[in-house]
Image (cartoon, rainbow, N blue to C red; front, side):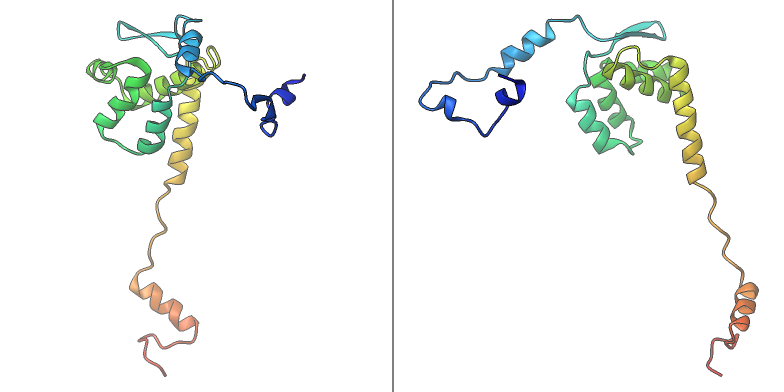
Length: 166
């Protein structure tokens, strides 16, 4: 029997009349977690942190909901799911800047999903690319023409400069 046949949800008659045990995901996931000791370690400002083996759902949900928040409590809450309770405060006390924080987040998120997939140098390059793209997107708005320029433009269109019908 192929995997496709096993996963065919339209075929439920093989359960007809049979007693089915409860699908115990608690036991299954506990067994899955025991297979490894944790994710990738990182050292920052004299402390060692260990990333989770997989991306926590809470991190993904919080990132989606709070991605534009600049509230330090929101950032602490998001970061807590990756590296622990007081990491943000420890990093800030040690002089971490926005760029360094962004690099650590990019590196961490990539290496939770696929350990070894992004180097620190690549994370820095990705951060710089994102920052440059944001800067290009925030170009200064076009200047609003002054009153004299607006009047001149109106005359060219054949309307009275005063705005009154002629």
